[in-house]
Length: 96
Image (cartoon, rainbow, N blue to C red; front, side, top):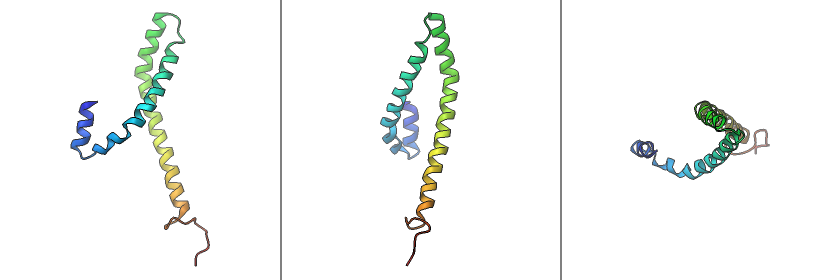
C-alpha cells in the first residue's frame, strides 16, 4: 500500500489519500461480512476453504461490484446535472 500511495503522490494525485478514511470504513464492513461468511463453517477445513475461495474469487467479485457502483453513481450524477440544465436550472422551467 505504501508503494501505491507513493506512486499516486509521484503522479500528482496525492489528494487521493483524502478518500482513504472512506475506503477504510467500507473495508471494515467488508471484513465483517467476510468473517461472518467464514464463521458459517463449523469445521476447520471448511473455514480454510472459505477463506481461500473467498479471497481469490471474492476479490474478483468485489472488484466487479465496485466497477458497477462506479457506473451507477456516474450515471446518476450526470443524469442529475443534465436535468438541472446548463445553468443549474431545471430543464423545462420557464425562462425570461
